[in-house]
Image (cartoon, rainbow, N blue to C red; front, side):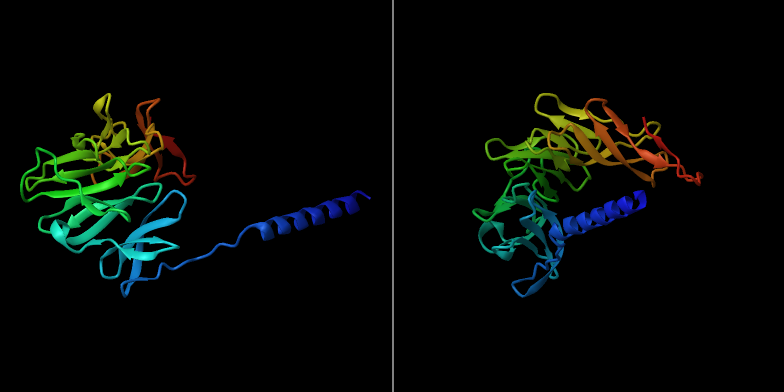
Length: 265
C-alpha cells in the first residue's frame, strides 16, 4: 500500500511540474534588424524593463531600438553637433542615451533622446581647449544626471557630473557609474556625494592599487568593480559596501584542488 501511495505521489508531482513548465512563457530570441541598410551588430545597454536598447551596427554607428520604432540611428547630421555618436550607457527608463560625439576633437560628451536628439554637455572650466578626450559614461534612472570624464593630452583626468540646472560639476578622478537617484558617483578608487565630496576607497588588503568602480546599487550603498593585486597584471572582482567601508574579493586559491576560497577583508 505504501509503495502504491508513493508511486501516485511521484506521478502527481511530475504532472504538476510539467503543467508549471508548460505555463511558463517560452524563451525567445529577437534580432534587432537593420538601421538605414546596416545590420545591427552589438547591444550595449538595456533599460530596466528591457523595452529599450542601445547598440552599434556593422558600420560602427550607434542605434536606439524599441519594438515600436525598430532600430533608429543616433547621429548628428547638421549644425554644431555634426559627427558620429558613440553611446556607452542608457538610463533605466530608456529615455536617455549617453556617450560622446566624435567630431572635430577627440570627443565631446553628449546625451540623446528621441525628443531632443543629440545635446552636447559642454566642458569643465578646467578643461583645455583642444587635445581633450571627453565622454559621458552613465546616467541616473531618469537620465537627469549624467557622469563621465575628461582627459587632456598630458593624461590628466577629471570626472564630471552633469545636470541641466548646474551644468558640469567636478567630481574628482574619473567617473564611471552613478546611482539611480544621481546622488552617488563611482570612479577610480573614489566615491563622490554632494555632502561628502570625493572619498578615497581602499584597494584589496595588501594590494597597492585602487578599486575601479564599474557599477552601483540603486541607492549607491554597494559598488562593484575590480582592483589590482600586488601583481599589477592581475585583477580581482571586488565589492564595496558603505556599511563596512571595505573592499571585498573572493579569490580561489590556485593550489587548492577543493577550490577553497578566502574573503578579502
